[in-house]
Length: 515
Figure 1 (cartoon, rainbow, N blue to C red):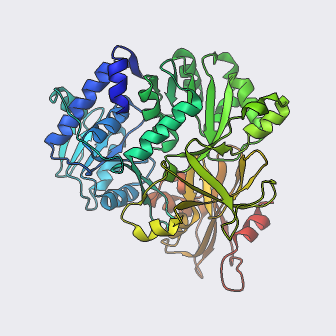
Figure 2: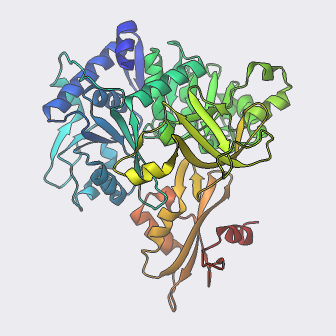
Figure 3: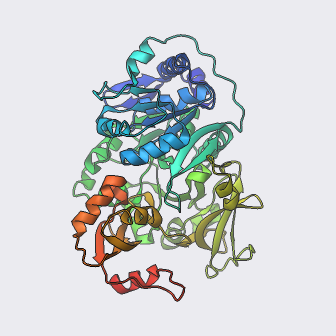
């Protein structure tokens, strides 16, 4: 629906800039229709799963819409994952088709070392040579040979549109189901919250496989705005693109912002087109917000969200009367987690599910509900029911509330590490460490890191008479999971601190080794 309106209202308007290529909305509409026809010709039916392993590109946007057009479920894959992790997701989701960029050919080749449900691969940029008995197609050829009128398959609002896999607390990724209603209502919410119009230009800088950026695909298309695709992150390239393409809004993970504002050439670029930068995924100090606003000359919005909520739950947009405060006091609000996102019911409750006092002192867990909240986890009915209480999703994040209703996260209930904008659960790293033949015990935790927000650290106890180096342990981890999940440092200990019941106390590890 969001693309249909843009094609009707803005057919000749430039919709997408992707390197040297540019497409109007009419052209994008035609390409999406052809891709959808190709999908149907391969026998893909409503609610079948299609996976994609791709950098930010026009093809990613087209695939989001083509899959929706035939009622299929798109499963974006994190290209940082190891082949074994991708295999698990393909199996769990039952994905029959994979669209892939040839730069990930080695990862795709690794998929054939194990059994997967894949029936075919569509190479997006150019065909890659891989061994394996599977049908391979060329993306552009598929579009060229399937031109024609396409009538979208009727879908219901509660049909699943997307499947995003997040790291599970048990170490197994969980597929978060987002419906067409979730996606569309979230898009409407961001249009209203950010006052989006057809004059806006979004920079796809954060990866499109992640909801930190993917939501903009639908919101900006709906209003007929322009999408500018930025490939792999490199600070100077991103800053140059903002200048040359006149980008007005973008979402940047904290690590990206940190690298940009500290870049020696930051003062050389013209950022006058920017009106808003959004960021989230890690706490931010008022002085850092000031530095961002001074460096880029635009407004800043701190955000908080989850894959399970499409993603936004809060924005640090100031209420009208708060604009009368001094600039210093405004910064205090801008650096908070924020007030509830449009259409979201949010409360912070104590252990008895009673709302905490709005005094910035009493800590509680954030609970949310609304039409942008997931219907649950793919094929995990027990975990789905455990995540909700009386219709409220329990986020597992701990926060305080102020008198204005702004929340501020103070800690995480679960041992989740946020490194470079990516969530890493300690248990999934520990599971890999325990696979190492020399490891007896392991505990993984995060420590503050100026560049990455948090750094993954592991305390390891080796088996008797065994020796190992940190490089050996870290290298082993990288064989089984994405590099960003692997520990950056290893602490070798004779024993791990434990409670009387035998539970490892990570708090003691943090306090002992990183004061």
